[in-house]
Amino acid sequence: MIGIFDSGSGGLTVMRAIREVMPDADIVYFGDTKHAPYGIRSRSELSKLTVAGFRTLTEHGATHIVSACNSVSASLALALLDLSAIPPSSLIEMVGPTVRSVVSGTYGRVALVATEATIGSGLYTEAFEMFDRKIVPIAIPALAGAIEAGEDETTLTAIITEAFSKEVLGTFDTLVLACTHYPLVLPLFERILGPSIRIIDPA
Image: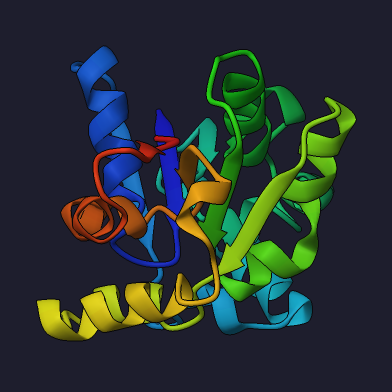
């Protein structure tokens, strides 16, 4: 059984992608809405929440785990395997597959938007640098929480617009949505950035 772990509803975008290629898979989903958003939490808090989340999934029969939350994937998931019953070969996190996919394609200059925790971990930046690729990391601190809370389109548009207020759009060709909540408002990103920017949903 596949267990999907996320800080809230964002991981449903990953579950949808899994369903497209594995429609008959047994899936158990745990979205920790009680403690969302994860992107503003400390590493210590994320560690405790991740261990508890993995335990919840294994108690419900998960034998493989997709750690959908980038804030967890970027800093904790692999390091915490020894504290769970899941072997490394049975865990999929978001960072490695995303970076490998982007560097193997023709995406030009890349910017990446994510939570403060994900950007602050530096893991995406370091992973891209291993392939001699530089990215423009852009934190959007309030967006995941606003999406989870069901804020209106005007509020969400203002948050995204503010995040790009200091960025020159001509400096990147591709934008990676490195938070599973962000694809839920993909049309807003497309409207704000325009048709010239290619947007990647890592799910």
